[in-house]
Amino acid sequence: MPDSDAESLLRPYDDRYDAESGLDGPLSQEIPRGHGIEGDVVPETASTGRRIGWASAYILVISRVIGSGIFAMPGTIVQNVGSPGLALTMWLIGALVAWASLAIDLEYGCMLPRSGGIKVYLEYTYRRPRFFASTLVAVQAVLLGFTAANCIVFAKYLMFAIRMPIDDLSTKLIAVGLLTAITIVHGCFYKTGVWVQNVLGWVKVALIIFMIGTGLFVIILRPRAISTPPPALPASSWDEFWSESRWTWSELSTAFLKIFYSYAGLGNLNNVMNEIKNPVKTLKSVGPTALLTACVMYMLANIAYLAVVPLEEIKHSKELIAALFFERVFGAGFGNVFLPIAIALSAAGNVMVVTFSLARLNQEIARQGFLPYADVFASSKPFGAPMGGLLIHYVPSILVITLPPSGSVYAFIAEVEGYAGQFFAIAIAAGLLLLRVKKPDLHRPFKAWLPVVWLRIALCLSLLVAPLFPYRSDSGGTGITHAAYALVGIAM
View 1 (cartoon, rainbow, N blue to C red):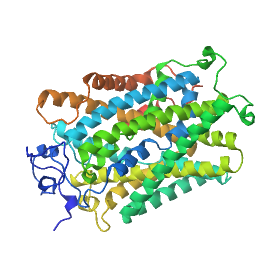
View 2 (cartoon, one colour; view 1 turned 180 degrees about the horizontal axis):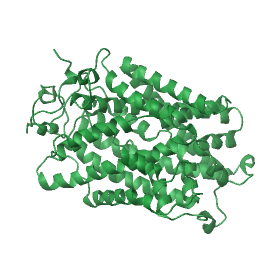
View 3 (cartoon, rainbow, N blue to C red; view 1 turned 45 degrees about the horizontal axis):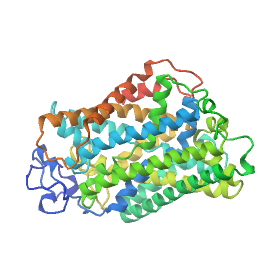
View 4 (cartoon, rainbow, N blue to C red; view 1 turned 180 degrees about the vertical axis):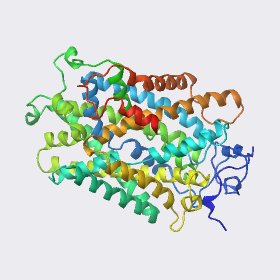
C-alpha cells in the first residue's frame, strides 16, 4: 500500500460539499490518483488528521507574521525613507496593502480549502499550458523557499546577549545550528515541535506587549536616563518630524518591500488547511485577527523605538534596533542580556513556523511529481512528518545562510523575496478576477472587495518598475549593487 501522503491532491468535484462547515467526513478522505482538478474545491484531510485548532492556527499565523521584522526592520526603513513621519506612514500603508492581500487569500482559501496555498490556486486558475503554473510554483518554492533571515537575526541577538563578537563565521555557524535543530524536531517529533512553536509564539506576543508598554512609560514619564542624546520622538515641530524625508519611488519601494516582508505570512494557514479543524471557519477568523494584532503591535513598537532611541542611532542600528532600545531603557543585565535572548527566541519561533508550513508545501509539490524521487519527498514516513519536504527546505536555506556576507543578507533577502513575490501576487489577484468571470457560480464563503483586488495589482506593477527610478546612494541600501534584488528576483 503506498503512503497516503504520496497520493494526488486532485479529486473529482462533489456538490454535496458545504465549504462553510469544513467538517471532516467521507468527502475529506484520500482517494487515488488520476482524477480531475475540479476536486480542489473539496476538502482533503491529512493522513495525520486535523489536529490544529483555532489557538494553534492563530499562533501558526502570528508567529509567521511577527518574526524578526519588527525587531530588525524599523532601523533600515527609517534609513531608507529619511524621517520618522514617513516611516510610520509607510508602516500604516503596508498594513492596508497586507489587508488587500489577505482578502485575496481568504477568498481563494475558502473556495479551495486544502493544503498547498498558492500552488493549488494557480493550478486551479491557469489550466493552460498544462503544468505551467505547477512548474513555476515548484521552482519558486524550492529556490525562494528558504528560512535564512531569521536564523541570522537569532544568531546576532544571541551573540549580542552573551557579549560574543559578532563576526561572519560565528553568525553563520549559529544560524546553521538553529535551522538544523528545528529541522530535526519537526521531522522526528511532530507534537513537540508544534508545542514549542506555540510557546515561542506567545513569548513573542508578550515581548512586543512589554516593549510597547515600555515605550508608553518612556513617553509619559520621560526618565532622565534616556534623555541624552534626545530620542527621535517627540520632534520639536511638525516639520522636524518629516525632515529629510525621501519621496522618490525607488527609496519608497525598497521600504515597502521590507514592510511587506514584515507582514508576510498572513496566508500561512492556507498552506496547511488539511490539518486545520473547521478549516474555512478558522481561516476567516484567524487571518483578520492576526492582521489586526500585527498592525497595532507594529505601529506601537515603532513609536516605542522612536521615543527611546536617537534618530541617528536608529538609522545605523541595522538589525539590532530592539537591542539598543532595551539597553537604553534598562541598562546592563536585564536590558542587554535577558531581553535580547527573548528576541532571539522570537526569531527562532518564526523559523519554526515557516519551516513547518513550507515543508508541507514542498510535500504537496512532490506529490504532484514535480521533484525527482517524488515518492520519497512526498512521504510522511517514518515519524508522521514531511521529512522530505523539510530536507527540500533545509538545503537552500543553508546555502543562503552560508554563501552571502551575513552583514547585508537580511535586508537583501527581504528585498529579493518581496520583489519576486510581486509576480505571484499579480497572478493570484488576476486569477481571482478571472474566476469571477469564468465561474461566477462557484461557492465562495468569502468574497474580496473588487477595488481591493485592483489596488493590489496596481501596487505590484508599481513595485516591479521601481528599480528603473533614480536611487540615492545614501538611502540605506543593503550594500549590494542597486537593483540587484530585482535581478535576482526576476532570475528566480
